[in-house]
Image 1 (cartoon, rainbow over the protein chains, first blue to last red):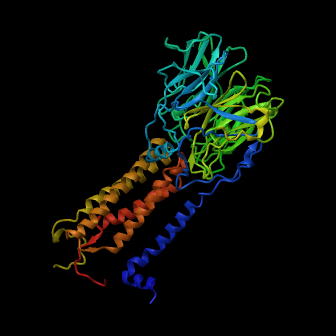
Image 2: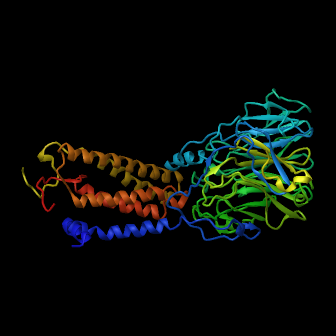
Image 3: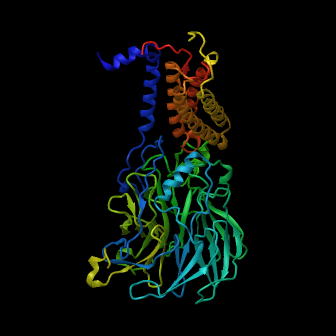
Amino acid sequence: MDPGKQSLDQKGRMSRSSVRPLTALMVLAAMLAACGSKGGDPARQYGSNPDLPEPSEYLLPPMHVPKEIGWSPGETPTASAGLRVEALASGLQHPRMVYTLPDGDVLVVESNSPGTEAFRPKDLIAGKVKARAGAAGKAGNRITLLRGANGDGTAAMRTTFIDHLHSPFGVVLVGDTLYVADTDAILAFNYVPGATQITAPGVKLADLPAGPIDHHWTKSMTVNADGSKLYVGVGSNSNITENGMAVEDGRAAIYEVDRSTGAKRIFASGTRNPTGVAFEPHTHQLFAIVNERDEIGPDLVPDYLTSIREGGFYGWPYSYWGNHVDVRVHPQKPDRVAQAIKPDYGLSSHVAPLGLVFSQGQHLSAAFADGAFIGEHGSWDRSPLNGYQVIFVPFENGRPVGKPIPVVTGFLGADDETVHGRPVGLALDATGALLIADDAGNVVWRVSAAPANNASTSAVQD
Amino acid sequence: MIHSPTNRTSAALGPAPLHRGLIASAAILLIAALGTDYTYYVTSLWQWANFSAWLIVGGLVVLLVAAVFLVLDFVIGRAHRLDGFSFVLLGIAALLSVINAFVHSRDAWTSVVPQGLLLSAVSALLLLVLGGRGWTLASSRSTKKGV
């Protein structure tokens, strides 16, 4: 006797009546689970016209996070041909941003999220998973100063420059005033050239949107050419308005702050998480890197680099990449979707660009003379992983063109299941070398042109 | 022992099974999620969707405890025979609620509308039927029939 039939007979009428709901359940489960697909080739999403698949919704949150293992002594990421990479400083506390002062001293902002409460069961689990890749690393909430260089490339002197900050990120020096963008305010510090420490408390120039929640907490910052205005990137308070619209007031925007009065206004909006702002050096056009929304597919939505127009609206939350509507937002606003500006340049999905610095000529190589370096912190919700590298986006006539060029890779372990470090903020040092804050490896890397005789063997240094 | 096929509760037969109250409690949480889902559907106020997410997960946790006590009821003799229909009813409601918990882990509108709301409604309906059967998975009949 067929065992399946036998058991059905034994249970009798009742279990037979349950067959149809069970079938319906299985169909539903299959339908819901059908969306956990793998991401495609990121190259299809580089540039001005990225391939945009249809959005899909997940049943299981699509988390894929490599385990943080740090760097062994002597281990470094891999620089592209003609470049070499060495650690300028290690053993830092979650370095997120680097900034070079006029006399060549390097500031390292050691920072992390001010901490958020779990609003939903999902938040409890997501926080633990992300911590695997070092996202929960203890931060210094301070700025460390690095000066000079030893024979092995490490900084000769290291001091705590400014202590007791509140989740700082952006730093910019204008004249003798050093501005630090804490998560909740811009602070102004008096800077004396050659100083190794600032103990006088900062004076608040302007408040910035922070709590409650403070989901995207980093406040990127730059200054315009004449030094009159600061530009500050303020991220959204959610992935896609799941914490309500009220907490999104004044968020997902780029602010313009008057340096003399502290008055601020929204310069551009709809930028979900503008983690880097910088002026293109030839045209003095403001550019931003923006982290786009999650959880509608491994290849949605591409993060991007774009020029920022005054008064421009870049879609979030209502739409992405111009007028592609996001159905998760309710009520929807077709009039806002119609206004949404299409970004200039796709960086592919979930790479998490967190660092942006424009090249200042041929210090590294002729290939990197004109364009933008971008630090990609790496994906947490995409399989296969994406990002985890520093790339260069070439520019022509003040516009991004062509395909990005990998500059520093090798942050991931060979199997994609481990990660040594994750690039965040970028800067050029006084010699034009590229500095990379690595917040999982707790290192600041310095990338410079390799000596001509071993230009091709730059990958592995001692 | 008294054999009374019409009497679905075992109250007359001795101490009540321990799992009943737990199943009723879990069901209240899961049925409440239909209310909060519907309120979110009507108001678009995010906090209602959050209530649903917690209610569903809470209901499933209590249900897990109920399962432990169901086994305990059989071990200590407070339950005698599994009510197959109620068991399947609750099993389906639990499975749908697990799926629903994941649907509610999505962000914003589509964490509820339409799949979450639909799953909450079907689960609530099944649980209300179970409520009509006395929130118990153990039938009062102690005689072994057909097993």
